[in-house]
Amino acid sequence: MASLNLEDMQQIQKELQAKYLEKWGGLSPKIGRDKLLWMMIEAGEVADIIKKKGDDAILNDPETRHHFTEEVCDVLMYLNDVLLCYGITPNEVENVYLEKHKRNMSRW
Image (tube, rainbow, N blue to C red; front, side, top):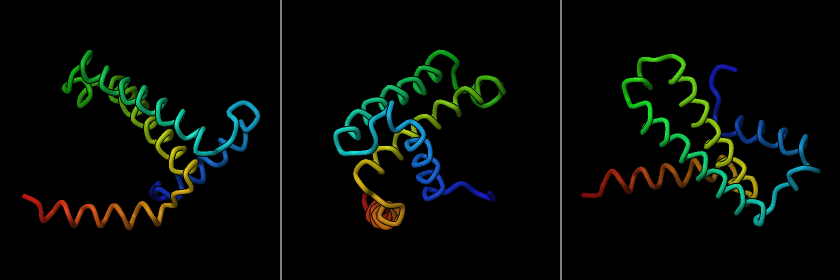
C-alpha cells in the first residue's frame, strides 16, 4: 500500500468491527456516540504526551515519537468508527473538507 487514505482506513475499521462484532456491538449512531467519547479520551492521551514529554521529545526521541504517533492513530481509528456509525463516506468527507478549506482560505 503506497499511501493510506480515508477509504483504506474505513475498510480496515470495518474489518476490525466485523471481527469484534459480538464484543463491540456493531456500528450504529448510538455506538457512534460512545466511539466519539473514546476518541476524545484518546485525544487526551495525545495531549498528555505533549504535556509530559514535550515537543522536543516528540520530534527527536524515537520512542516518544512512536508512542505519540500510536495515540494519534487511536484517535483516527475512533474517528473512522464514528464516520462509519453515521454512514459518512470518504467521498462525503473529501467534498466537505475541500468546501471547508475553500471557505477558510477566504476568511479574515
